[in-house]
Length: 330
Image (tube, rainbow, N blue to C red; front, side):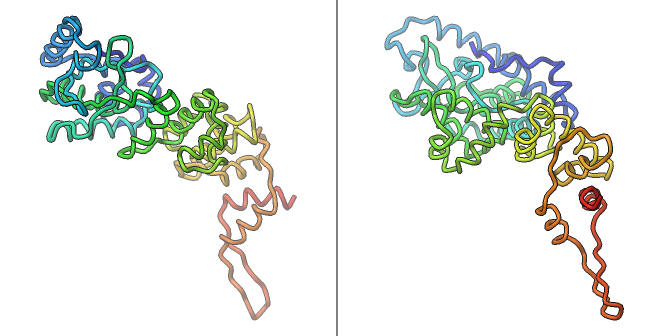
């Protein structure tokens, strides 16, 4: 039988996902603890078949005992594929990923599963290594779209692949839906714990070591509220990472001030400029530094009107830029 990656409760879904979604039922069906549970009558029939297959006499002691098909691609009852908790760095409570899985489910309902999932044979069972979005989409199609999917295509991971190789492949094989920054941060941190340096990780993914270090800092320092700010699109991962590095334990408060400042001006997304403007306000707890680069940026974005008659120049800047500039003037 299938196990789930995370035990996301309905309460957690209410707090994290539902405010950003137009259809809460879809979110619960895809991201909750029941997402990989047989609910429809057809799904329950598949579950019974999976139990029989699992308990049948084993001949080869591998995937061939549970699957049908050729050597390079096997046909497997989806209820026989197990999810190792914590293996996948995907965040299935993210609105983007929920929408992605729902779209996949409708595609699979029409055209079937085109891309094989990748599994390993571990402890006498099939364990997912790549394709959890597709598997969740299959379950959604079966349980909620009324589609009958007796098997899904799977292939086996290279026997010589190490844990590092398998984690690297997890990201490289997700070309259909690239990892989001928080997912990259989680993946790179796991690779770091396995002994890879930022330079090693950067080489594996053709990224800069600086970018890897930023994401490692993000994963280490981002509180749950900061992660929710990023997921909701209120701040960028880069903004969060640089603020964590600059503010330390005060980062969450500084980011909240920036978001509040942006919201007061009718903007849903906060930037470093909002943070600096908010930090300039009386009572701010942020320790944001102001320097010549800030002045240069403000001047470059200002509207300049020259009056040759009285030889004056008028600079027109935004209220946000003025809030940044005013503390420097004194």
